[in-house]
Length: 115
Length: 115
Image (tube, rainbow over all chains, first blue to last red; front, side):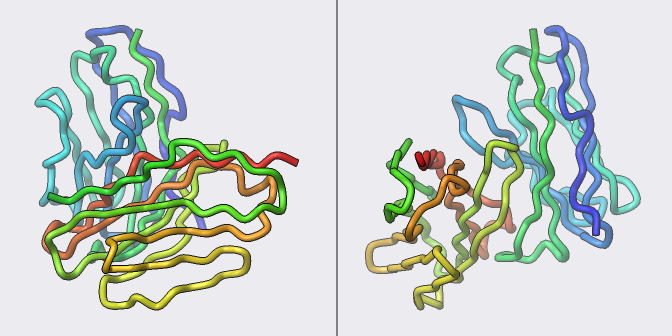
């Protein structure tokens, strides 16, 4: 079956602009996660959804970052007023039930470059 | 506090050599899970293995083997008879029962296997 998909694969934006990154999880997976991979910070957790709710947003670095999930499926990560330090690869993952220890399946990522 | 340390930033070997990737973790939780993921040049994270904190049995899968030792808080990964296709960045990760199921990643070890 289809894996986790993300769009766009690459995004170049000017500093100060808003961007939206999209994630399509594996069909039937109730849990969805956003991570960020950057040279300085490695791979870091951003936010976790169970259904449409986000019980853990502890990794969002500032209030410029927000995310939503609708219909228990697609999720959008929005970064407002982008800064150069937001440049990174944003990875989305999903898991079947979102229980601890469950395998997370990752998408190919969106590479964001803020100029 | 939870933490995963991969002290080896980069390892280079020649094909057919054995190589061990080290992973040391810190957690206060008694129930936790450890993972290894592979990130080939294409960028997508690929799940390799999961162990829970109550199962210290070592595991072998083909040329891959994992050694989990709670006494030293380590979960090391060995590739036997390495091949060029093993070239990738390998991440060790931790998830804790008390901390949703987000993954806490180490900084990764880049493995280069030369022919």
